[in-house]
Image (tube, rainbow, N blue to C red; front, side, top):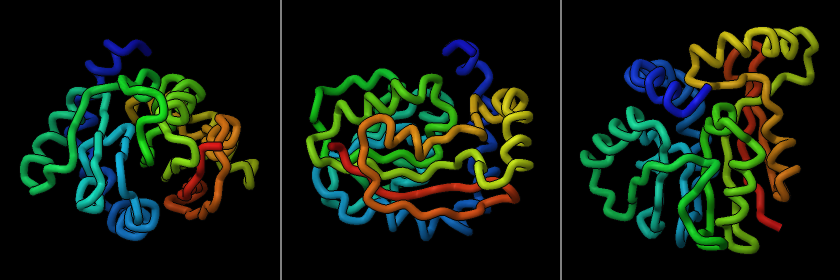
Length: 209
């Protein structure tokens, strides 16, 4: 799927995303976001900000640049930010695979439910590591392939082609936790939840080494 195709196909998805994710945010987001976003002082980069669900959780002393490639998601994030008194958050349109920032320029990078849908996961993670300062943290919340169940894992593989179209490029069968480690991060802690039947999600903190 090309960038042009993604932008044309994402208008409706952006329009319904907040409603689709509302239950997950109520059940898990109110616990997970504060946990992974605590003590994020200094310069923070959020990749794939979506409609801005994370904005209210940022500490006031964090200087945040939130990026989002999809113009329809970005428009909704801009509207949400305009309704909040958060002058420490700046929005930029940019893809995770090509971040327009200098090397080692951020103290923290945040992603929430992003790396399932990037076009090139390895490249996007390499970019996240590139812009992080040595010892900087990568904080994540992602859903992953169910490798503990042959049935559910196979089902995720089977539905991925259709789900990618329906879910704006989402791959439900990606092994994102392993990809984070393969990209040169050391995972300091990670926790696992079962957000939907057969669909595990992981959240945690990794450090650039």
